Length: 430
Image (tube, rainbow, N blue to C red; front, top):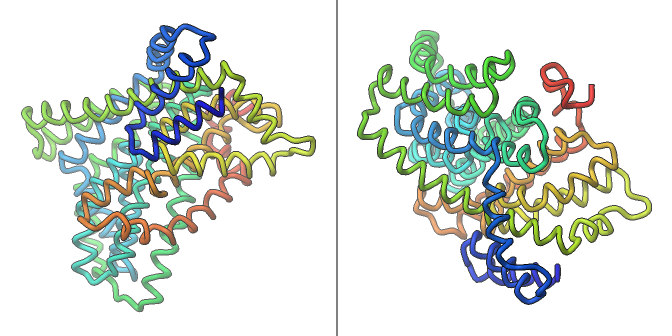
């Protein structure tokens, strides 16, 4: 029945059926044909998948990201980063990646980061003479770092389905997120040097002070989130609500680019986005439950863990599995379905659960821009108005680059565990 379930799923995915429908319908059809269990259980499992305390953080982080995009925070972050690195070769490209890292630390959403930063930076890069393919690839890929740098929606989902501390996962994602971004920064600088590009701006200490002052309120969001969690002022879930309130306050009363009307409009848009995410979680939950009923974890264990399996071969198999999954489904769906299956295998091999979660999230980050269904590809198409095929060609060099970052994150666990060992020692086995 597992083979039947997977065949139906992939047929529906290739037919471009919405992911939620593909997950739920394939599960229901499998239950109906097998006759082993009542199909009524499916509705219960879908509700149970959404009825998780840690998922309460998701709507607030999505809401906060939308407020930041519309309330002037994104623009000030761009000005801030441009004043710091704009004098270097490829300054606009470096600015785009750095701003995405900062916005990712505010929003936790890859598509929101691409929409906010790409919409502002793509026209600027084209106007400054950057090659179209490089510009498209950069803005499509840069937003994916938001999945690693806290607060990450995908890390929240992983913590929900495995029981791992979300706070420890947030802290664990910081260094890998920096490495992920640094690889793209290095490539951007290399391209600029190779093309002998002049600096995009002159360095001015006065401009740095001005943009720092302007962006100070925006930069307060990650400080509040991570600082509050670190010092125990509030939980990761509570930090989401704090960030949304703070972002609304800054947009309305400090930058004054946000009104009560736009707040209501943003709330409606965020609700629509949230419904799309949660309905995928519901479908993935029943799908994962059906996989478990028909012993898919045991089948996966037999596939990944032969008689000579060690951590190296386990990671190869898991990374391939998640990279393939990322080509066909959102990171939330992939994590909800597959993380509970590989988690017990990783624990048997002595792999740290925080390191596992961050590495799986790095895979889903790459999945955000791998064809055919990488979500960032569709967002970039809307921003650039370029054909999908051109978007796919543009991201290919960046895919290979970020695979290097994935290897570093995978086989250097201390990179992930450095900060959690200081802040959440009980969650990393110390």
